[in-house]
Image (cartoon, rainbow, N blue to C red):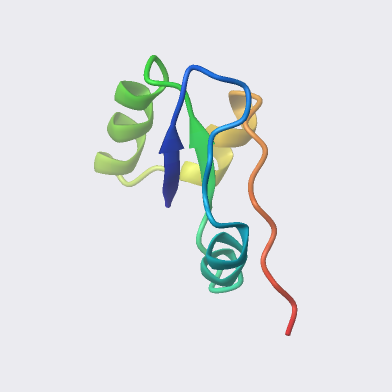
Length: 66
């Protein structure tokens, strides 16, 4: 799940909701607008979005344990 598109270093999103979604084993992260087309291509071709994020230096949000 893409939380935010931002050219800034710190996009804004609700970390509690992000953690809850990540806990459902969904890759959750933010990326820049320049990365978005490649992200969409990865998703549309059913490749591993979490692996794409990692390969692009994007840190995934960790799920809430609770």
